[in-house]
Length: 253
Image (cartoon, rainbow, N blue to C red; front, side, top):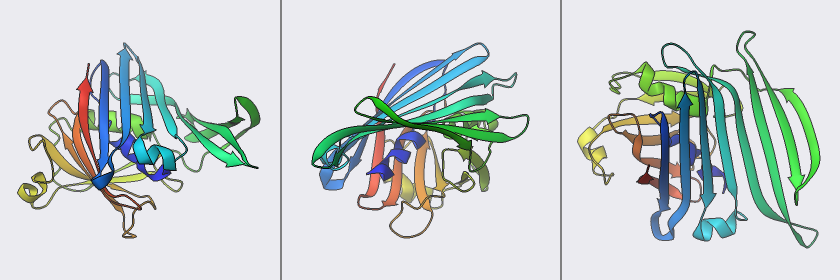
């Protein structure tokens, strides 16, 4: 069930000083399998992005009532580019252990040293609210962005949102190797639009280098962005167990 949560992050391409957006995620006959809420706040030279994702229905049962929290926090440069100081991921779920149900929680905080191009990770584990382990280690790789700051910065780097050739980006939080994400143009755009409820906007492919896809190929996320850069709908292809997963914006404030 961990595999659907990358989808919650990738549909949260946000552009606003203070924004709160909620997405509904569905899969075929299972109907709604999750909700994600994203909040963005920019105050002068500081920014903070938070996402809370949780499974629902059958997915909630199978995942042990799994919830995940993501946070990116840092500064904004003179060009409007977000520069993360840290990126944090927290996972919480119930798990059976020795015949008992235990609430497990793990937090990973990625600390950026942009001057030296280094990354360190603080890990803390809890069981039923009690800390059982903590450590600090070097990150698997360094990148200038994390997953949240990258998708915010995308609109700044490409204001017209028109993808004419393949572009490569790297971000902490994508995978354990190099954080590579590719954004490519969509072929047969009129045919692709028929897969969406909202057929206006800017549709592009986001290629994710992750091992969560059933066809043993790189994952293809079709993203439909509004003119302001906010993702209004997305389709994640060929996810193990689920197949195709769809997400759509349902609330904004």
